Length: 333
Image 1: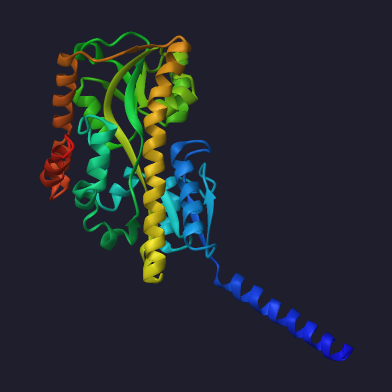
Image 2 (image 1 turned 45 degrees about the vertical axis):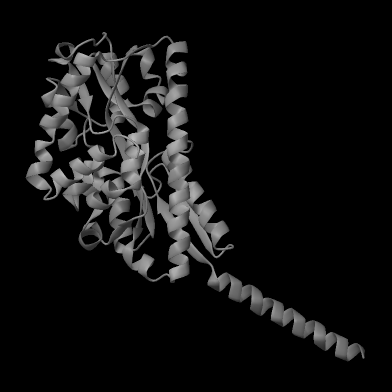
């Protein structure tokens, strides 16, 4: 009897090993790269995507998140996602080098509010922007989420369009941003964001523009106390997945991925909306002065935005359709 019990124990042990090995073999690891540090809306969205996908798949998928450019700069990790070296990444209009329409995620003066933009991204506008992107890039856009509206920060108050004329303002080295700055009469100074604080201290530039998250993180209001709520560009990023990897999944697995991406994007929209309100309090308590553009100023910004749209008409075949689509979402149905 003792020998029989021992035999059953050994058999049970072996079966246990087999089940454990099978479970480990079935687990799918997804690596996702991003550029933002911990605590930023994008990184929170990446981690929430992993959490939701793990829950939906009952532990089959494990998402490993690499924020803060741990896997290299944007162009490097985008290329590695395209090659399938990693499965996913988070980025923005950097992908316009592969498909020019992707630059239209951040069309100047297109959205009146976060609600307006969210309706467009949940609707046809996102589909029109990304039409043909998979074929050109080998990447699939899983969602779209905001990092925040860009606002001007300057050493002197900006009350009208003429106050921007000739100002040396930092701009990202992106053709669209440079074109908008030129249309505003700004002397655009292209430089990495990391160089902005020292450039302001040295008087190389008079100001710049950034979402609230960046303005508050670096306490820009201490150097440039005048924050103008221009909201001229909404920065929108997405989660991207290697298309071959996506197509290797079963229909059920694809459904899990899509649902996890949707939930993660919903979280980020809510986080950014709350962050916009909190940032105003942070800036004013820190000594910054916030001002709203007058109707005349905002109208002038809108004209400058439309002037920069010429870039799209020259490079994106369905540019007008995209712009018209976004306009239709201005009011909720």
